[in-house]
View 1 (cartoon, helix red, strand yellow):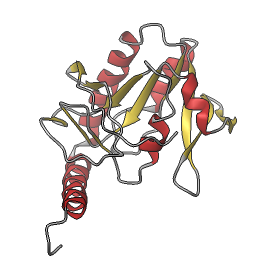
View 2 (tube, one colour; view 1 turned 60 degrees about the vertical axis):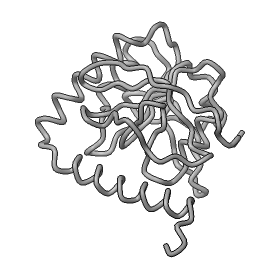
View 3 (cartoon, one colour; view 1 turned 180 degrees about the vertical axis):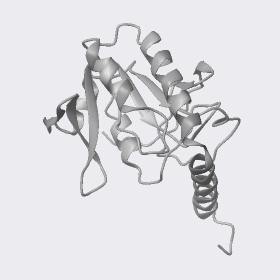
Length: 194
């Protein structure tokens, strides 16, 4: 990295943190993840505040969130949208039901969601979200309706004081951990992907 270039330094720090956080999640016992996912499901359902359309995601094995959460949202009459990664790493959206995922609705379908549940490896107090590094959610969150609640699901210990941030990183407004809901600050210096 030679000259201490800010972009390279930020990228290297993000990569280091991603590796560290991914290892920590993988080391968590499955029983612990299951308990935390049940707590997250109940907290999200309690905090919906009348959202009739929620953008969510089908979690990887080690991620917070669950298909049980998606089913519970759907069971309450909430329209659930889930992302489908396109070849250019942008996200299209499809409606989720217990029977499967419907046809693609287009990249702007996320604008219908009053609440977006987004994956994150960690979130900082200012709302900076550390994702997996593809930029998919940064592009998608730019298409959310003004005032939409952008909520990251985390395990305990993943809400941190500070994270490295690039100009294109889209912040979240809230996090849910097994300990409860927390509001986080908003970054305003972000690139426009719309």
